[in-house]
Length: 173
Image 1 (cartoon, rainbow, N blue to C red):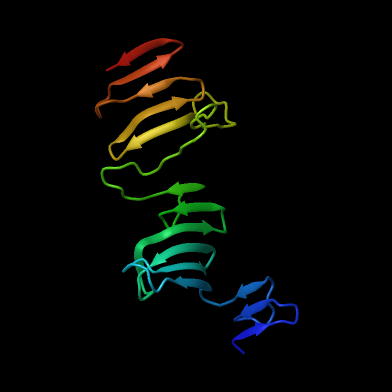
Image 2 (image 1 turned 180 degrees about the vertical axis):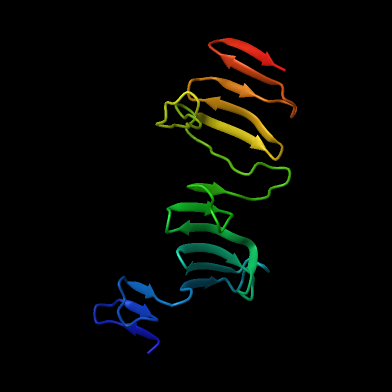
């Protein structure tokens, strides 16, 4: 038996004991595939798949044997609660990764024109030596904002830094 519809209307594929309205079971990689037969080349297949301790949303190629235009869209790592967008191996609790030449990687937009505010970064940690915000590029640190309000800016990759503390600026060379 490959599929079962129970007397209560639940459907099991790969199982004779469905636990939800639709249960897909496999010992390797259970998946649900949507194929848009009228879609453009390389972007017809959207797949929800599980494998190991992860659950994936993927854009697949037309043959469903490799990444399509979108590749790995979103990953849920069920062992540690990490979520990845654009990566199948999230390194942090929320990890976004991608390549967008000449454009920004992400955008957070509040469309409330009257009382809308932008972005809040909040930490329970009050240790003055800990960072609330750390901005880096492939050469290293650009700037950091510490929990005590200190700001450290490192401009040209040299050892020179500018620090703001209690309304005063200090330049260290």
